Image (cartoon, rainbow, N blue to C red; front, side, top):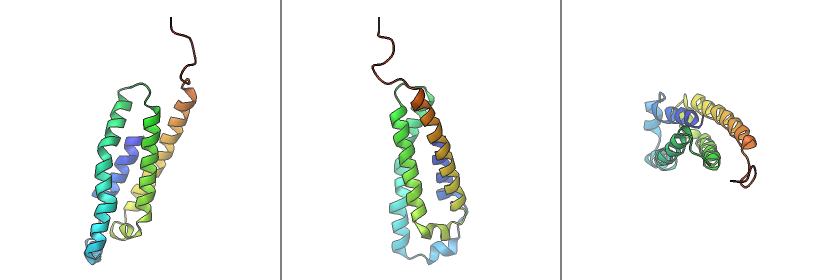
Length: 129
């Protein structure tokens, strides 16, 4: 679900239909700010998130904390994108992708909370033989 959330947000940012006139009306500083504060961080965070997701799919042990941290980063980034109001004027479909991202995040948090409860704390259980 973490990958679904990140992919949904990425689709909204990169591939969703956009209003070219609104982007053209945006001053050059605003376009630069959008690139620096939204699009470059999205691309920069994609590789670390992909690594954590792939390791999670491979069943690597002790990956609960990185998955929780990744989920928190995605949620914070989604909220940061939501705070950039001018993006919704230029990309009207972004709101739908952002809502889908947050719903997938909620499902991921629920799954991670269930995994957290089932996980045994370190040092507990049967002692090694």
